[in-house]
Image (tube, rainbow, N blue to C red; front, top):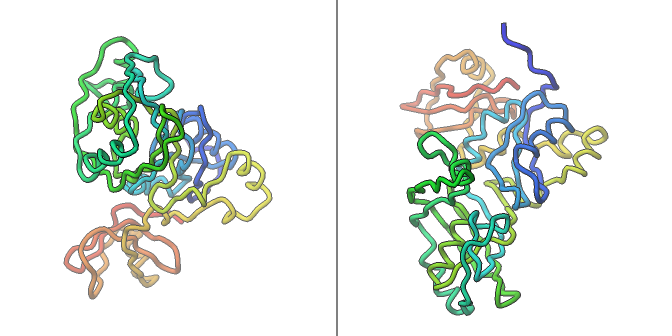
Length: 298
């Protein structure tokens, strides 16, 4: 018999404003400790250097993590010109310098080459596996991994300001797997210099935005004194881009039991099956037949 997981059966999303200098794993542990949730996970890693939106799934919301990870993300970051680092951010040692500083006109003219579907080699210091090992582990051991370029999607790349000759601020909206550190590194190279990310903040992950985010300090204050909807967002928030399919209660019971449900008309593909205002299951519709992929125990 498996061990019973300790903690409360809390289901939903905490949209955390992750603090600077802390890992995503650490943040998940803190949220789980504060809320007392039995189960928790995050919807997309943020580097310790980065702050901002870190969606943390509790309980049944963990079944929707892959959907939030696949959603678009918005970042704001500062690029430091003239210094390349081993990590492509300010945490790594400087490995190359350049006296070239691009002008505002040059920067803006270059951004079109970094939008749409682009080829990008992930940073050597990343969690991607190379020959079964994490790239960052190989890099730390002095075994520079061969980072194979892959196609990523950048929907928007906006220059915001150049506070100094050495820095520029940008906002990017991008798809899954896009590394902002690599984007900054490659833009600097394209402009005839080198650079790295000096600071970064994530503003949104799908429907989970900065405006909805809560700090750890505030979470600790309200979790025992406020209604759950003051800090806990519904499981289905991660499924905002997936069509909802309303079912009757008898249909919902069939779906929960693993049985097929027939609907008169519905487009094929993934749906969030709902009944009584609650999500019942992640499901797929084919030829008018609805079959559960993941059932929610709510």
